Image (cartoon, rainbow, N blue to C red; front, side):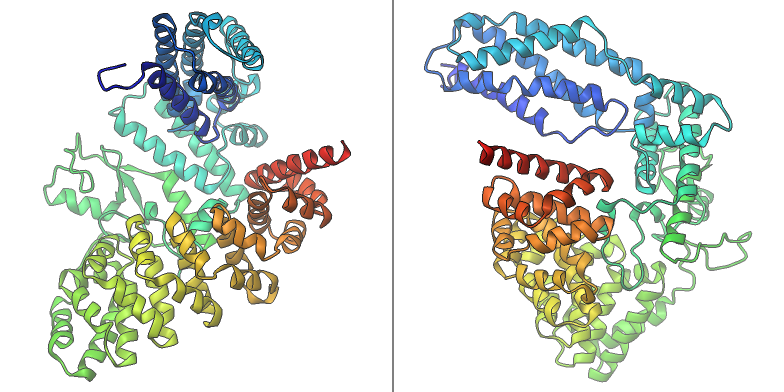
Length: 628
């Protein structure tokens, strides 16, 4: 026994099993090293039965065996860190560093093979089947040690061509974007952010790769602008709130003004700001980065052309007028200015909120509602003046119109990230939920939208669910106006990202209304219903409740005829239902799922192809067992 009384055998085997489990559960690699990464992870996963069998064995391990297993454990821990690092960060930088990364994989293979060679298998109590599997794994690591992996020669040539040629063939750029998984607007946005993060963490020292990465990003961006692909489904799911005005992605807002940037520039810390705002900051004599508080190495600012293009494309896709550049400071309404925010007027309105009669309170809340909707400067000024606690008090007003104004003013104020915290800290969530339950239809709709806005912060998802919002959101989903149903669906979707809220939604009866909306093509809510079902199906209770609603025929029909995102979500629900359930698999086959899934596996989105392929494999196994 060790000093804590723990059996050293169990300790080392538990650590080994945990390392393999962690490696196995890491997300799929989506960069140039996908094949090398996949092969490496596959070999490591095959070691799992050894540790499990030894842990279940009654035979004691000697010192020699424990030392050998400890050595393997160290190698697997190093491997875990390597593959985590390869699966994160800038895809372009990793592709340019390909020889170095391939060398690390080879070193890790050598290290694991050496550790496996030291293990005295003859002293273990193992079944013949596990012995054969471990011999196979060891042979695979030996073979991999003797030959160094290489990247696809096509990728090598394409990288060289695109970096060296000012006007490369668009076909080559397209092929490169596919191999690096940089295909969409969001892929490029993430890559741009990863690139800037790399500059920060490396203090700007990335050798001669900086210019190459800039050139590659620009050429890939030009390709995406030409093709104008849809935003990624995952991002679209997160931003289902498409009624009212579109939600501006946080990365497109200036950290100072919180407004959509029109001329984004990068400072020496790698942070991006609106040019006019950061220039005013610098002109005031500040020597630090406003967001990080780091001392600026220099005060030069560099245009962020990639982000600027992405903002322009987002504006075009969402019907938003592209912001105009300001001319020489003549327009006093600069992006980060609060000069036209009348603090005296706001103070007067707050005085009426606090001490006025019911009519004055109603009028003041209405004025603040409009001011908070107008621009970001007003939202900051109104919150700083202390309006939020007063508006929260008015949520309990007996006057329906005052209540509507108050909840909508809070909705508009919540667009500002800092205000979200202030609203929650003022104890607003229970009162907003009460408005959602008992207010007028307009107040209920805006309460639902406010809860969605607040639930963007993860800890608020928990608090909103605990406050009892979900049953009232489901009720609004059933009986609201078209806009109210959208509000409710959006809030339910976002809240259900938190596992505990999935159970609340299921127990509150969410599945039946979702199925009704799914079957009614004229409802305009098919997208939302499928997106929520897909997220609930990952919960065991949700899976059971959905199965009881007999959804397979309608899911198969969506997979056969629906829009790409709906086909993907329908396949995800079907996959959840069929996994581990032979009855659902048989029913899916009887209802014609196989043909629809085959077509989806060839022409769907990446996620849809994976889900469709997995269900097809399960259907085949069922068919084989029946034939036997």
